Image (cartoon, rainbow, N blue to C red):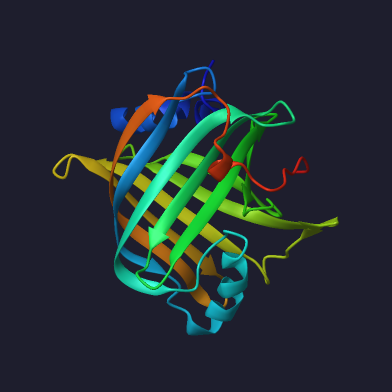
Amino acid sequence: MTSIYQQAMGSEFGRLQPELREYFGTDAASGLAGHGRGVFDVAGSPAWFARPAFRLTALENAFFPEYNTDVPFTIDNYPHVDPFGRPALTARRELDFGTAVRIFEDTTSLQDGVLTDYVGRHRRMATLLTCTASDEGRMRMVSSRTRLFAGLRLPLPDAFGALAYVEQWWDDDAGAFRITTNVVHRQLGTLLVYAGLFEYSTHPFDGVLPPAAEPDRWERRV
């Protein structure tokens, strides 16, 4: 069995740095989950006008309104099969802003070779996730085509939506992973950012999500 990222990227997966192939190569049959710990040099919303909306999404464990430097964080990655039989990866991040600890959780599922990322405690927001390898072997991800599932499937036009750009790579000098993420609106600019360094290791996992990582609701629609 191969990971959802390897299946989605095909031969391009082999162009990633070896450390990234190991990080993104864990699948539901591996018997492993991952845990990372590090510090974001910067994290949160630099756009003051967007923070009221992010206060609401923070209640859903999706994004956060704070904006600060030197933010400690953890990430837990659980490869599994979702309730609809799709290979998936559920991630749970905790960011300690000092005044508040924020949780950001999502599940990425693979169907027909396409990755869909479901965000938040109730997985009501979904985006199309596209993964590519850079010339340097870094992982690049773009989240686009945002949909909201509030009873109906509501696509958000580009004029009202935003794109998320993620780049992750192995830093030989630091002996750790680096990641940068920017959520950018076409007209309004950068709405959310986090960038920093983290160490990562794997541990045994039976494929059953722990209660803290189990969403309150699963979504099947894409």
